[in-house]
Length: 142
View 1 (cartoon, rainbow, N blue to C red):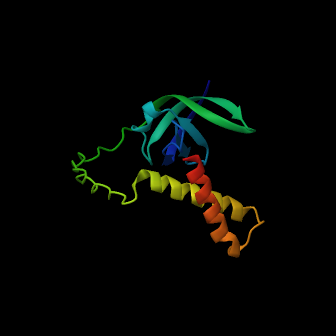
View 2 (view 1 turned 120 degrees about the vertical axis):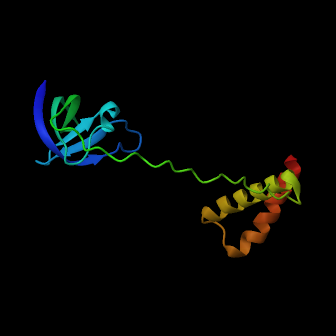
View 3 (view 1 turned 120 degrees about the horizontal axis):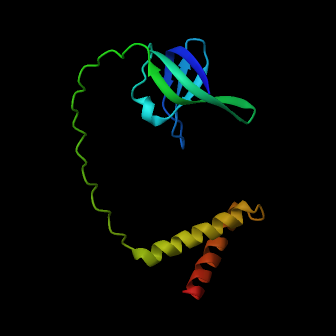
């Protein structure tokens, strides 16, 4: 187990899909901090860390296991209670005049025509014929 005494210059929240916070000392060295310590750490604070070094993808990661505070964090004013904005229910969806079956047919036709056009074997002048063929295929399957 290694130790370091640092003055925290930066505190970073965890990245997407991560749980550990990161702190950077005044010397630029970065440490990975478990969430249990994160709410106690502030910029400008001096702390003593006990950490172990893990290597990952050729990088040394300093995983903090214990934090000792050298100076108590400054007292923060009591947080103000902020009411979240009221959630307004969205209006009900408009009823589809053609119904679900027609919407599914339109999606099928768009998919078929889109794939055919994406193949590069058809031109703009073929869209109408492709649309009719896809519509007839839907009706035959239906």
